[in-house]
Image 1 (cartoon, rainbow, N blue to C red):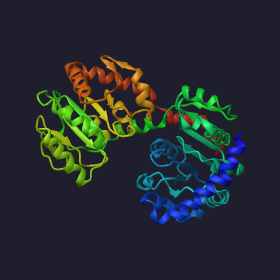
Image 2: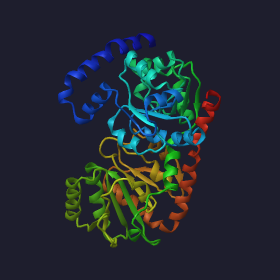
Image 3: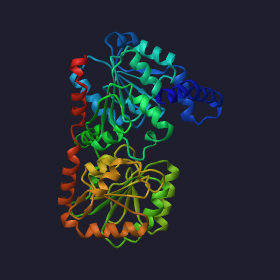
Image 4: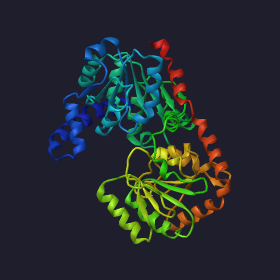
Length: 431
């Protein structure tokens, strides 16, 4: 059945999707249009080598990361370059939003658009770059890509993989396509033993190992190598700081009415919206003003007055800002799906999320874990829930340092997943 579903995918669904995409290209959104052009022209960018022939002759390690999955690949890339500095790193992407990230990762030698999901496109890509192995980050295993890589004797490994009980990849016809694709791999490194058990239901023929989540290593690396924040705005040790990170308007519609009810409680508030466009920032300021809350913008402020909301209008510093706080709310969870809770947890913060958090493994898992005064992750549904939880934690302010240390110790158990993955791959023997 798996082979039949793969046949339908390869010879019907893929060509149909390709033809439809090309026909609709003039009216596609900018992101899809850019991706189509990149794939059509085999876009790539050399960062260190002089030519693709130079990369080809040394045989790169190929890592595929769709977009945000690059955060799972970063620590692996760093460690590979440390252990094998002369072997090039080639990273392919399947979303143009990854391009800016990839361009800023110094250890990458070349990055390129993922080839179209056709055998001839993938064969041409493999011939051009001559990779020695292919590592898939997280979930993005493309069936034809995996199949052609196996035909070319290219070892393929999936790492930081997670498969929840309700995953669409494990149900319906998709189950058979997933089974076919994963059976093309050499190894699968899952996040947890639970993921291993879920994959066992597919009766795979490849080794499946629980090695942990490499993104935690990236989060800890970031905390240990922080970007510089404005020291003049740093809260004092006596302050109790609440941070709302990566918020969307749907989140802010719940947060702001709740925070307005806490005006007489000594809480310093950091609001870091996901979108920092002038239009959104102006709208956010108007909402705060209507709620009777004072505010200052991070980029303009020389001081952070007590009782004022610090609006973060600069991107790229949220992970560092979590270290200023005592409790966090993670945005997206009143919109559609929550953003990553890892950074806040690694900083030792109790975390709040809204109702839409089923997409996030850590948000679900750490609801089951307790610290000194409650669960590590707690769910709120309305402004009243926010008020109750903040007031409860504020009363335990004297114990916050101990609570944060407990959480950091718990999250610290996720360290060194990168080393476990590399040990499992036994890269030295393959090279």
